[in-house]
Length: 599
Picture 1 (cartoon, rainbow, N blue to C red):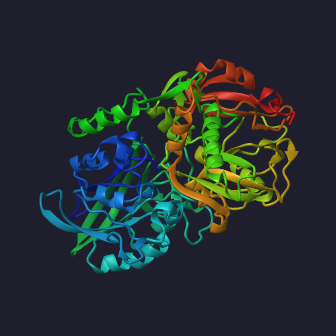
Picture 2: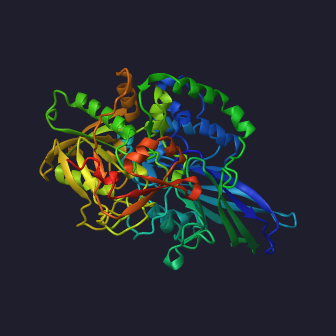
Picture 3: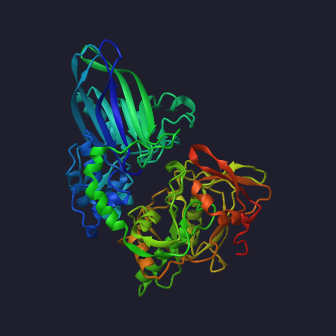
């Protein structure tokens, strides 16, 4: 879901069945390339002073991309900004399942005429059809920017309607650039992660997936029953496919062996690979491309000038290494900023006397992002880049009116990120890898415990899995039990306010504030207004005690710089884990589960 990753679709020499030579035909990049880092986000900041071409577009132009589609984050700054950024691209952009209310937004598909050389040196024409797809939820997630200007359609439905038309227009090969992940659950309309279903559409010959930060093929992940997901040969629903992680972690490569017979092309074999940019053996990343580095020199300099601006001071480190096992000062700081801003907004309104709560999540907490994907800010001066690290998305601040019953279910959704750990469990992985950390909301203004002896109420995608499950215990506000009929104002971000991450999509009447101020700006203002930041003390949440039970948390190696916090949790360092992570042993009958248990 983050910017900068790409894929290359290549063809192996064809004609007469001979496979002798690899020929790059068209590299493709798609989805979430234009937002997600300071060097990209300065293009949407009027005060940054940057007025040039978007740096990601500059890089794509250097690489001579042939086609692209969009991701959901491309819409974070609105359509006028997106239109300006795309105007500098030297390659066409397609999107099949989004339309303007008054017409077509982008071409629904592309037809690329190319030449391919066979083993005997003879050139042959080939017409490649490209269809681009984006999660239909984008019109909800960025409703504040998009309003009623865009209409979204189901990705699978759009594919089924358009693929036959693309074939009728002479496409020899159809490739889906699908900004969507792999969901092995039951199919349903308007799926967010529909790669399996799109790959199964008749006529789709290859698929480049994304959005969910997964890597495919991945030899460490077993295939599904029935072979719908086959990592061994790199197919989804029998179709060659690849997904290249996120944040520039991998290059997705799809090699296709083609045979031409009586004027028609057929795929006779393929090889799918998600190639790491950083060597797993040496830890050394690929060398920067000299041409791209030169093209981005001015952008890089402008970004450094902007992000090095001082905004405050923190007497203590702010990090996310342990944000999934208890209160994090980094999250408390964001929640405090949201709470303060919402209180100001509600002053003098009909809602000013309602209790205000604040929700945020650890956006950088390892997982599919790897052992370096953590917030890690040392004590001392805070700069603008630190605010961007604490809050990496350009979401805006929203206020929701919610009941105690909905609040409890909201927390149950968050607590579904953990595996079930019974009283006798030993060394069970704490986190469900299918649910990313940015879906784990922590709500300040409350105290509560999470009982992992119970099953998760929600599946990773948000659907109800065990409706009767109750992991949230001792839920209190101001020391009193929260009743189902209690009413609160919840300060949160626009993505969550419109149902992002599988959370409730409330009716408009319950969204009492839907402003356009970015949470990151709210955070910067909060920090600047103080001589030094001091996140509220106290314990918001802890795990319920389970004598004899324990879990394993994989986190970044930087956690070893915080020995006092590890000791406070009763954690034992078990050494290195998979992929460079550090493994911590966490007992559920020690300090981990005793903090805040006097609530």
